[in-house]
Image 1 (cartoon, rainbow, N blue to C red):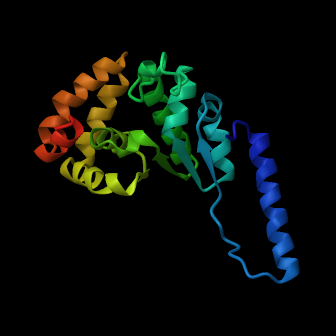
Image 2: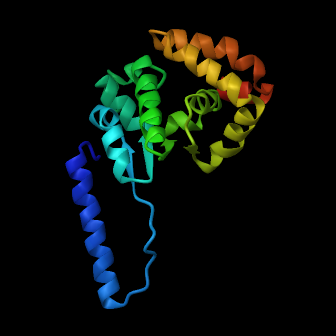
Image 3: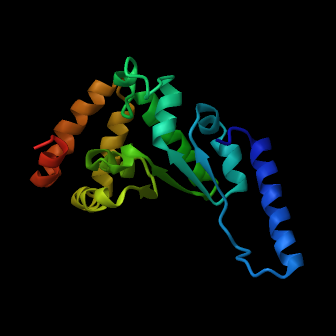
Length: 193
């Protein structure tokens, strides 16, 4: 959980030292490994512009980012109902990270449960994410969803979602604007049918 530029620079230096050791020892290795940062805390979101100057990519960990942004322990049964990936604070954190990464020439991905939901996948593409990392089970459903809706439409939905002030409003937006465009089989799977 890198949260400062100093931490990243130390980690980068350790990687350079390890690579130099491998070279000195004559151990074959890939000298062109892409280095990136996991964005999982509010501090890393707000430092994404500085962090992205030193890496090739940013990868948003949606589960931890949601938990730490909302200060909710998702493993606590009394608080788990407050864990909400579509909360505007989470969505705005994702949008800020994408903008910061792209401004620095980094690609930005996302992993976690949020990316595996077909409805959310459309929103995430609209927010400008370059890569969605999902479980094998979710790949066909997410692909079907994002192939159904063109990027411009997804971007319009994302802009509207970012202007909302509650997760409930975002969910209603998704139901009214995304659901009519998705294949019926995806909606049945998502709704537990």
